[in-house]
Image (cartoon, rainbow, N blue to C red; front, side, top):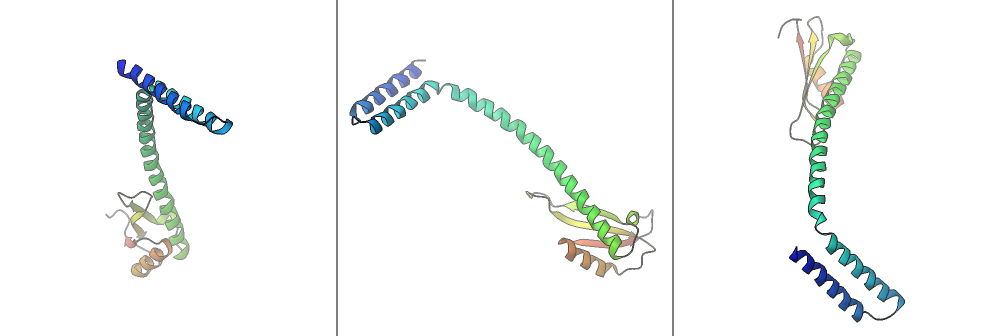
Length: 156
């Protein structure tokens, strides 16, 4: 408590010396007085800063967890959206039923924004397309690595 009172007295004396040394006049004198009053007020309110810091840290930690949860949800939504668009495009280009096109999106880890690391497409066995050409075409269209595979239903 003694340190707190000493800091208020020291700030007040310092401001008083500055106000006495400031030239008389409307602009400069009023500015020095305002700056001095603001300084003394900040020194007087400084003990509250510790409480405000703890309060702000609590808010930041709550927001941080909410942001992390929402970023995971955003990544999942982005992956589903990309998978749907790739399936729609593949079904249109190769005249397939949308339900026959299975798309798996693998997001890249440790990146700020959603970025697909790889995409894997499985088509039904009766599909007669060149998987290499399909992989190339779809990779160019979506600017990510896309592999296309033809499998019989029920096989892994």
